[in-house]
Image 1 (cartoon, rainbow, N blue to C red):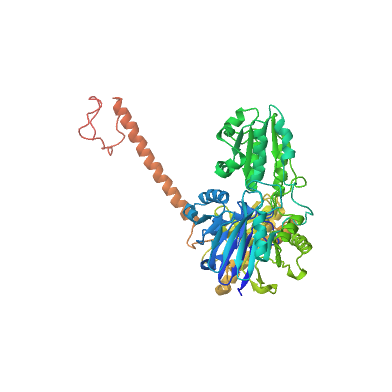
Image 2: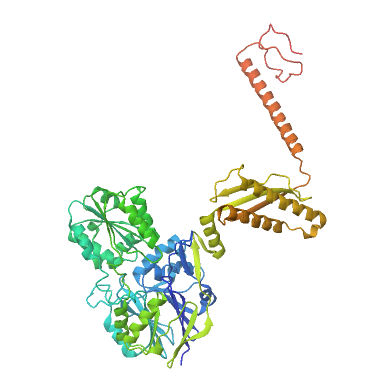
Amino acid sequence: MADIKFMALGGQDERGKNLFIIEVDEDLFVFDCGLKYPEKGILGVDVVIPNFEYLINNASRIKGIFLSNSSAYNSGAISYLLKDIDVPVYCNDITETVLQIKLERSFLKNKSQNFKIIKDKDVVDFGKNKIEAFRLTASSPNSLGFALHTEDGIIVYAGDFIIDGQETSDFSTDYSHINKLAEEGVLALLADSEYASKMSYAVPNHKIEKYIAAPFKEKKTRIAVGIFEEDIFKLGEIVAQAKANNRKIAVYGRTMQTILKNDMIHSNLNLNDDDLISVDEYMKSDNGVLIISGNGDVLYSKLAKIATGNDDVIEFGPKDVVILATPPAPGVEKRHAQILDELARTDAKLIALSDKNIWPMRACHEDIKMLTSLLKPKYFVPIKGLYKEFLSAEKAAMDAGIKEGNVCLVDNGQVARITDKFISITDKTLPNGDTYVDGSGVGDIGNVVLNERKLLANDGVIIVGATIDSRTKESISLIDIQMRGVIYISEDQAVFKIMQKEVNQILDNSTELFKKDPKKYDLNDVKREIVSKVKSLIKQESGKQPMILCIINEIDGNFNLKSVLARSQKSRNYVHKATSNINQKRRSNKNNNQNKTNKPNDKKRTSRPATMKKPNQNNKKED
């Protein structure tokens, strides 16, 4: 009997950042490695990725990372993980194409050999265990689920999926393969449950065709459609409508351009080179289609740039139709609303598809029930979603025949043990949590920095500056107080004078303490006392609690302002004298060149060379 454990480092009770681990004896199998977008209260953070500490510490035990599709929520963090460990990554060719672009941006081209292309029905043998890939229907073509074969049975990882029995393209589900897995015996099913509370099938609510068909039939209009990079199924619907109405297609987005050049996409969408035009050609056309793509906030940034007239090429006019075909992604809902407002200010006609009309291509309640019925697992574990969605998924699994005690709800960091007789949460926990990516920095931003950013954004900052004698600790300068984002203040205001007085009093008291017992004197204590006093005063005055920075400079006790001024004056006199001599010589040379007579000023001026001719023979000789 194998020792099987299931662990999650992300994706549980949250949306995105999916990362799951199955441990079989000493071997680790990692499924998906995604990111999520920060909530609006997390200032300055670009994306959030899982804590990789456990994987880094156990890198030698990892047999491979298996990615279900190219969605950023499932594969967006792989470039960050590959910076720390060197393991094989198994994915389909579309996912590999997208991730190679991400690696170039992350300066990790040398990691490209880590990717291993895997297709439907492929089997990767690891000795005692093997992993078999099977095809599912999701927003990306040939999205994969994975079946881990162990001594105790098969553990199925169903990434993003929906049940669509009529789909026959590269977005179809291989039901015969699923039935074959069920016949071999499924020990546990790990199923996507993010939209389990939608009490229906995702089909046909995931299609946008009926909402965009009418605008595509209009004459003499250009159409711009905004979608996320992972919405390749929507890309197919847009291309189909464009071809049906003899419209040429342009793409604004490097990743989507690369995806369109993929041979599989070309064949699936029946595209040829004549169907594609450049963005410049789109602007000159009267019926072109522009596909604007990006991940998360990148898409909205592109749309905002165009809407505000700051794009170098694209501009929306009165004959344009703008379709925002993607409902807001988790974490960027506010940004979505802002972009709709910006687009509404343009002259173009705006069509925005909401999540009430368009559902994501993710498993809903009936999809989960159907897949569970097909696979007939002994245990069911909901993954990818909020806790309330897990409860809906639990009900769907039980409706499909799973016993009540055989559903296990696992949180991030928890470890679930799976045996033939039971499934349960163990006492062991793994290091987990959010790692913030801010620009090029990964993990440099913690709670302290985030709290400081919130404080600065809400209440501003006050900077208090002073200078003291390093020998006597006496204050030898005026107290400088600067405020930003707090209240408008001038030097004649009472609160300003009170703060100066209180700071001076604290410095005087510290000086007396130093004279009595130098060992008890601590400059950091003085700074903390000043910060506390200023914070108290400004709280009484304005009700705000800004960040307080106290800067106290210590200078040499031999410092003498008069001596510095004297040295400065001496330097200025020296420069003035040198400049005068230079100017005098320049005037003399100018007069000599013009053959004018000049009487020397004094006897000391003997700088003229002996060979130089005299300007005028009638002049007196020089001494």
